[in-house]
Amino acid sequence: MANTRRAKPNSWTAPSRSVHKIKVTLSGSKPPIWRRLEVPSGITLQQLHHVIQAAFGWEDYHMWAFETPQGRYGIADPELGIRSAASKRLNEAVPHTGDRLGYTYDFGDDWEHDILIEEIAEPEPDTAYPRCLAGRRAGPPEDCGGIEGYEYLIEILADPAHEEHEDRLEWLGLDSADQFDPAAFDTAEVNPALSDLATVLIKP
Image 1 (cartoon, rainbow, N blue to C red):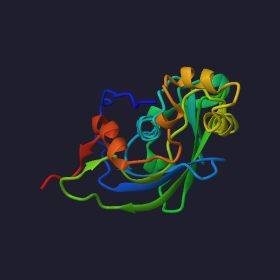
Image 2 (cartoon, rainbow, N blue to C red; image 1 turned 90 degrees about the vertical axis):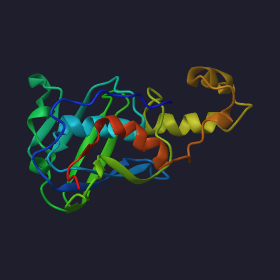
Image 3 (cartoon, rainbow, N blue to C red; image 1 turned 135 degrees about the horizontal axis):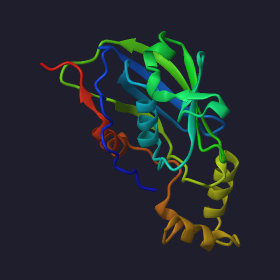
């Protein structure tokens, strides 16, 4: 599933001049599916949402929310106890190395992500953030049923004799199962998807 190109959010440049290095892991994935990212410390959680969407290849079709020590943030919904993610900055929610927050995408499939703050450091001159430093494995396709559904999808794709094999290929828009490699990951594919969101914090 291809990454979509997103318009750069308004007021992307954050007032903070530090950078959060974060590791975002898709909870329950075995082997683990993860991305290591560097993002401006002062971005809002709404902006971080866009970063994670691009990094994992999500299509931003569904509801989402962050779980922080201060409460839930996402698209504001008083009935669900969710405050606006645009009102909370990353360095306010998780100001210290070792802090964690959660991110759930799609309240049906419940793609839960664990976000660990690995380091908080000064940005490098003439370097655009956010950027992806490393990662492992392809992001799952949208609407495949969460982690268990994704594991079942991989099983079906690996078995040409499976009764659902052809239907799943058609659903994914693939001619053959070889066109989807769950082990594939390349920062050179992720970083262009982040480029519309990136800004240089320190110019030479």
